[in-house]
Length: 279
View 1: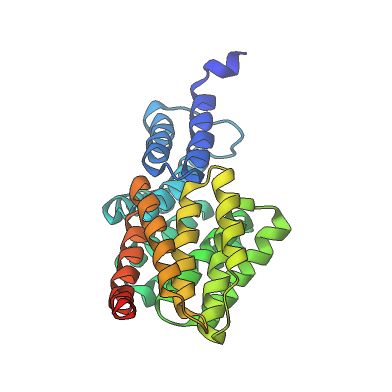
View 2: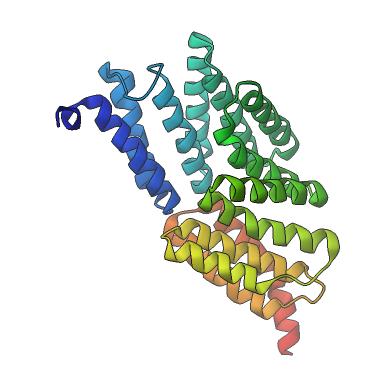
């Protein structure tokens, strides 16, 4: 049981807990755990287990930290994580550090609403993954690339990106990312085809996410459902409003600022429609 008292194993345990806590939507607690794990290794002279290089685990922590901060809308923290990755990349030339640098820069640009630049940077991150056979991270980066395309109204390309993530995560058994991609496939399909949205698909994703404790995914599914219901061939502003308000309430509990802002924007857009319908 000696390994249970080893600082390296403690850092690894904090990393695993941080990943799970992030998936549960407790982004601030996840960030605390991941920051603690990274600090223990960087400043404590700790050798992490199951790793060929001392910086691998800190970089893995940084990757998840960037995702936590993306969900929280904390651009300042993402920029700090980008600087950390860039410093490690310069010192070590590790492929994982080069990837983390490109990815964190892409997320920072997304948060700054620089969508074209974010697209280019995230594509660079994907190329680094493929060149270095780091395919574990490909689905999440591809999903973020889809978000950058969606924000540029390049809906057909976004649909292709989200569909690829959905298929890849199904094949790899990556359940949480598969759940996250499915609402966006429905949304972009509605945008490019003007088809009816599958309410059942959204409800299935939300219910599965909620049952598995993925509150962030449940909130995101509600907001994306609301957006999709406004874009389908038969728009349903009243039902969309219900979804958006539920998603906004849950996102507010989690501190998911970008999701809150999107839901609020859509609610302001459909507000006049609901008023007119009531007259």
